[in-house]
Length: 244
Image (tube, rainbow, N blue to C red):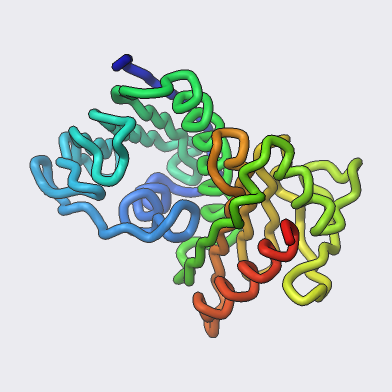
């Protein structure tokens, strides 16, 4: 049954409105995934076949699409960003509204989208605070079928060697690909997601098993010599090993 939804969030970040604008229009690989930049005008083309319905740099950016490409559960999707200066332009306030229509499995779709929004926007703030505007090399991967089990995500923390009492903001040493130690800050942790920030990367772990999908990992690597394929292969082997 089709039903409208709206997910709205507000936050402040230690970045200028111009830096936020650059991130959400051209730097999406730093916190989300790489996308073609929108055509810079109202009526222009946006990501996933969308149309730009508001374009006012660096204050307002909205795109809207019907019959979302590759997503059968959704017939309308709109992403709206409002950005205002704070502290004489040294910081920014952002309001983000994701709205549209889900046509199937509404409660599950809304719950997943809402929780992912919190994690993605947190990652945006991490990117803006620690890495922007450095170029990024992006890799993403999914676990095997076994990672769709209801309790599958609990194995990720164990495989990383994260202490149960490690809280957000803690400095940790985890077991990365090949068992190599990886020094990081645990920048996000709840039952659904884990975020690690190293000196040169943001590594994100997604407990999508909670919504019937495989556990996933994305790597936003800001090192000058980063190799996306090598990151993908290394973390794929790691993730497959978790569920072997």
